[in-house]
Image (cartoon, rainbow, N blue to C red; front, side, top):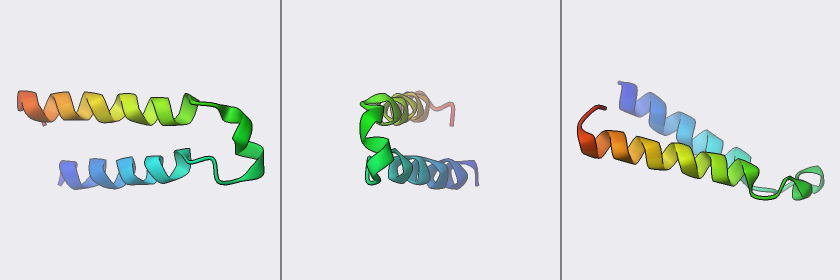
Length: 51
């Protein structure tokens, strides 16, 4: 159950981090980098058997 919720949140965060709107073009790599960091942490936790 927890993995499903985390997967849905991660997909929504990935969709939200793409600079598709004119006002978000100036954000730079911040949103994508943050989502990437969360993804790396989740992968490490899954491999370590903590999730």
